[in-house]
Length: 602
Image (tube, rainbow, N blue to C red):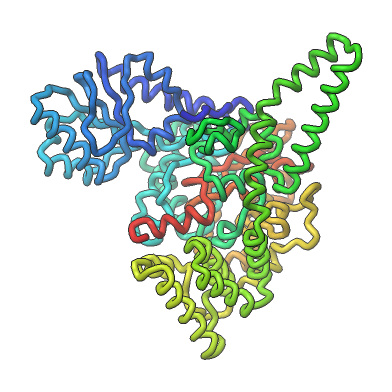
């Protein structure tokens, strides 16, 4: 299992959240007396690795298995299934029960749904004639701390479910997760939402306050001053761009999963042929904490400097008489050697991707599209990618980026329209007609469409200063460093919402997808140390005793590591009076977002 992240330095007591989740799970298992086998859906197992250590579960006499189509092989008479509320899993569990009965095995069965039970799942168990044999319960795991400042609701398919399937169940889940946070840290007095789904979450949250009122002490005091909800669909531009921070690039090329990345051991300098190893990536790694949010070209320089410094220290310690305190300092540095070796190996591996001419050409094209400098060059480049049969995901990311920034594929004249249609036909011809359903989905969510109105991108880009010339990636003074010149639209919006609310930027918000709302809840105040800054009634409550306001920024549909880096950069800037906690349905990148649209069809 992955390394459980250290949450000691979180601006909010996230450790208490994790400990509560641990206690809830342990109580479920302890209440089922005797030896038992815990069968976990594999993906959920990855999530649980961020909550509880395997060794702790084994202390309670628990055998661990992953759920599969195969029957559960165990001597235990009690089998406990821990699964998300997915209908297809009910068939597998029912099959296990029937298989045991046919073998004459007498077992007790339990299903604990995460985070809640659903009638449709229980109906399938009834249809399969096993419902009466199973004890059913819930494990209410709505929110998982990924790191000191990141909370995940673990809703991989939230965007697709809302935008393609019309299923808004995930929005209730998000509201419930926030409501649970409020029950621990107090009701949040200020709520700002942008985007259709985000406004719906804010409305559901308000209803929860009415239907499940909090006690007066929770209402009177809040550790979180402001909640900002923002839809992924408000800014589909940012995730389609290649992230250029260290952690962002690791996710782009190697895929970070549950706070770790799985690699061939040879990449990490361990010569064991064919063996994979998991590399944890969270704030427990002090070097990662220092370099994760830097632009990758700077990371390489930082690692070189650290390696050179250690080499010099070693030379000095070998040739001169050192005091005991100097020896202790050197030994401390040596303790960081495994971390440094790990990141030098990782950076070296990443360089094999970032140095490729194809990657650099793609970066240039992304910037050309964002700057809206040439329709023809962009479309010709995409066409050439299709002719070369480059990976479909790479083609679609650029095509979506072009479509979103131009309010569709252009049809200024007949030739342009023909060109756009030709491009789509080529796509199907080169990659197979089974992707017709994928293209329909892309149109349904508005990522690909024919241009029917003038694009607002130029106006938005200028008003929010999204293109920053001569970005200094080594000593940045703007969030644009995370994409080497492009400031993420989503983070510009969040920054403005934090400083002054939506009102000063009403006209720009109207140019972006979805409605926006801003409410101050009656009867709720933040901590007594917060005093409203005169002349900034739309902004955050400021702090009188030196402590910082806390803002919870929730991304409905996913957030990228580059956006997280940009938010951390803002929070760390001199003069900023707020800390940020980031909540998200899932950490995403362009590939994973597009793949969710593919899921059933590709």
